[in-house]
Structure formats: structure tokens, C-alpha cells
Length: 200
Image 1 (cartoon, rainbow, N blue to C red):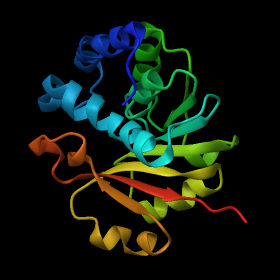
Image 2 (image 1 turned 180 degrees about the horizontal axis):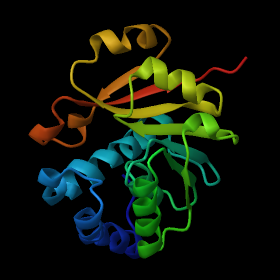
Image 3 (image 1 turned 90 degrees about the vertical axis):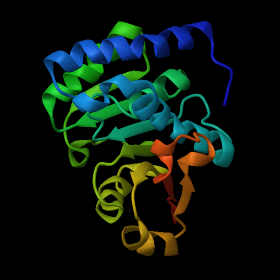
């Protein structure tokens, strides 16, 4: 992973208290999980960045990314901190979750994030990549994002994915265990799933 600037360190350090405060008002993170925000949410989100660095050679400045079903801002906000020169649109159907994501981005001074209360099918722009975290099964998600994404979909998945991913793997989907970067028992059944899109 790239060396963090002091500003990035400050932004990451501010997240646990901000989410704890918001979570007391609007439940965006499981109550039993809020004390593990750094590991279970921030570091989990950054597994996508580790994959991008290791397998895709990083994201160039100006790359555009849509976070589908971002909830309170995962994985989009940690990725936006990590990649300040990449533009992120965070979308979710639940307005109160988008409100939290925007408030957190504003509070830590992340300027490369836009949020939108919408479903992905309502989004008209085109992006280089889509990211998501446990939003829906992969075949349905691929159908939704292919229309508005040029290069591929990166998502965080957990559990036994054999049946869900079988058709996608035949089309070139790559599955990498998160535990290779984060050797904590929590990540033993968690994966980064990347489906590249080939444009004709």
C-alpha cells in the first residue's frame, strides 16, 4: 500500500468517532460492530485498494468510481481518502444513509466524493469502475453496473460463493481472499471479487 500523507492519516483517524456519533442517531453500522469500525469496515473497504494496487497497477488520477449501495459510506469513503485524485460517486436508495456518508465526507474534508440518494439504475453518468460491499448477488449487480461502467466491478463478498460466482468465473471474474492482506480471523471467509468488462 502507498505511504499515507499526514492529511490522510488525520482523515482515517477521525472516522471511528464520527461514525460512533452518527450511529447513535442513525443506525448505519451494526451496534455490536461499531467498536470494530476500524478493522471490520475501514480496513475491509481498503482490501479493494490493496487489490487495485497489487493486480491493476493502481488507479490513475482522474479515474471515476461509483459506489453502489454505499450505506453510510463503505467502501467509498475509505477509498476516497486513499485516492484523493480519483472521483467517487456514492449512491444509495436510503436517504438517511446518504446523509451520514455526506456528513462524514464533509467533516473530514474529503473533496473527491459526491453522494446521491438514488438507485444505480437512475445514474446517467459513465464511470471507469464500480465498487460495492455485500449489496446483492453478483449476477444481478453485474447487470445493473455494466450499463454505466467501462472497466469493471470490484466488490467485497463473504461466505461460500461457489454457486453465486460460477457463471461469472467462467467470464473472467477473479476472486482474491482478503486474509492475504489482513490476517485476522474476521477476514477468513471474505473476498475481493473483480469482474473486468471487455468492451467490443
